[in-house]
Length: 121
Image (cartoon, rainbow, N blue to C red; front, side, top):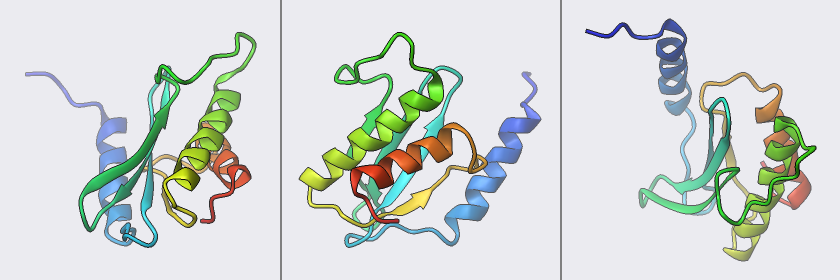
């Protein structure tokens, strides 16, 4: 039987603790963030209807990678692009769900990019 990673277990506990208070409605959906070692993913979710409204990641085909861009710059670009997609879908205000990660580095860069793109948190 494989051992579970204590860091992953601790993050899952933080996610459960955060999700008790954060809930995305139709008027103000939730922007959920997942960070892997290589990519960053963001999706805007309506928790009432249980539907993903908009999604964007560095893994998307529509995302063009700059060769000299580091991961923080890529995360900021994902934030700007998801904000543009959300605006075209009629979404202006969101609730930010950092997914149990510290609000630092790539997570902060993504949220700054989304604010820069015009989303209100």
